[in-house]
Amino acid sequence: HTPRGAMEPATPPELSPLVDENEGVEARPDVPYRRFGVLSVAVLSLGAALVFVGHSAGASSAVASLRGLLRLTSIFLPPDRGQVLSDHSDDVFDTSDVSSDKVWKKLATELQNATGWPPAKLLHDGENCWSPCGNTSGDCAWCGIGNACCRYQAAFDPPECDGATFKETRWHTCVVPAKPHTVKHWGQDCFLHCQGKSGYCDWCGEGNACCRKETALMDARECHHAVVFPRNRRYMCVATTGLCPLGMSSDGHGGCKKPESSPLLNFYMYQAAGPTTRSHLNLSDNPGSLGGTLWYLHNDIVTYCPRRYGIDRIKRFLITMKASDSLYSKTRRNFDTYTSFVKAKCQEADCANKHWKKWGYNPGCRYVDAQKQFAYYPDAIWYSLPGVCPSEDYNSKSTACIAAEPGGMCERPDGTDTCTWSAAPAGEVYLDELSGIPDYEAFCLGGGFEYDLVSDAGIGNSFWNLKLDAAAGQERVHRVHQLFSKKYPSMPGSLGRHPCDAEE
Image 1 (cartoon, rainbow, N blue to C red):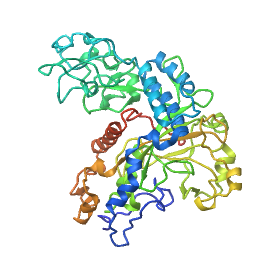
Image 2: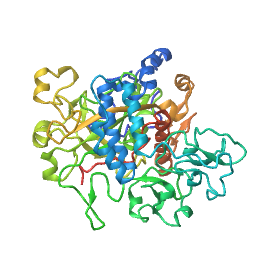
Image 3: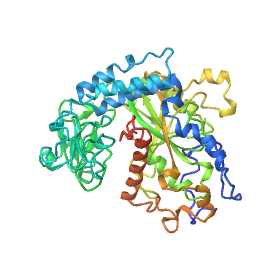
Image 4: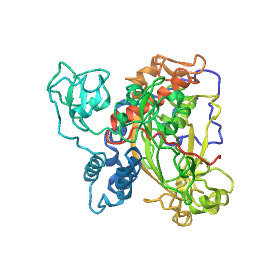
């Protein structure tokens, strides 16, 4: 099938897309429809789809990932416990002769200790907790610190009720949550419970805030940096990165400032991928923020059936980065300007002198479609990660080139010119899962399209409808976060942090 509508793909040809079109099964519009062998695709995908991220990364990569995860998890914890967790993250793991299973089990233990888990002894077991808990469900001290007031199979109870064991099913009763939840009362209206004001609120869990998406910039300052709103048009409990944006610190007078040396940053990047896309970002790549990745998919991929380049999933990576002293000391920026890579080769003329020799091998970034003329997604950003021998493509990276151009990837970024970033696999979700297509091959053969440019809607599917609608774009972002949380419950579904200061 050719694309629906006359508009050309929105991605400028000089910019590398978020997938290397030479990887995966290619499905171009000028060739006949190619039947994908469902079984063969399933076999190729099964390992990546079902194996937990720590297993796919291997022990050493998993350790690096978990160290970063412990650091980034500290942003969701009260300052005292979060700082302790961050300060000692390097001491948590013995990297010698350790399996990924052991590493992930130890991570769970550390997270439980850091978040005050497990809860206190359950109180008032079997009693009706609705009135004593303020006529609302969820976290409730009356049930014992860390326990919750929940009803069996209640549709609107918050996540701390999910998976709990119930002895009494006739009313709301005290239960022990099945797992720790840093943000309490997620999805419930918090305004009255937080004394009718926005900002930090213990009802939402220590260190979290009661904020409303539409008025966040007018609410308390901690709401300016809130993380992922579960619903629109209501005050909701949300995690917040604090009073200052990522990469900045308080100036002691109510404002924010950039630190004297480059900070260590942790956040997620995403990549549109196919069954045979490499699982690691070690050879120079162009991933994106979630908004940037969805923007690319919406404009260039799902307008074809089958999708272009065999793309069928979104991969997620946990990024740890620290800008080189060469870059930060002179510019106070954490990112270099964006660089396009094709087959892991820099596409700019004289890349070395413009980037690596001048600043070191730093991640770069750029905002995509800032005016939101082609698709409405928040924080649509593309990143560039310079790996080994970025001046040559996959097939030409000689030993000599790798030695001369080592790139910026390393296990523990320290701000030297050749050690500025690390990337650990953090899961993947399938586009069929997102859009609710049970049989993609049959969908295409039956005339379906995920997105038709002319009607601004799908044919036989509605997930990608309304490309320029802000609420629809935010809902797609939220759906991806939900799916990642469901598939990888031990990791934060979203960090709400997509930094880019290269264009400041």
